[in-house]
Image (cartoon, rainbow, N blue to C red; front, side):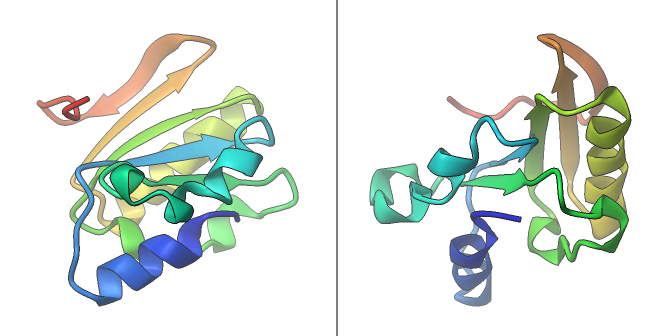
Length: 113
């Protein structure tokens, strides 16, 4: 997984982003690795679950109580597995897109852009 270190530091400092973007695949990995360098983006950090990662064994506790947006260029099965893992970790709301369509959602509000 890429990008979670800055988010974990943020959460342990009792700070809370407006929403977290989770990408499943490799397309966004360079951005996920650099978001922490730009303080104006801390409100919407990004994490990338890599193809080598076993989603069922990832520690996603940094998502507790947060609004989460999931998308990816990986298979529908892996994107859905990330959706379930975010819910299991205690995310407040989870919006999951795949191939440009909202296919899985939980929650009532969309993140402020």
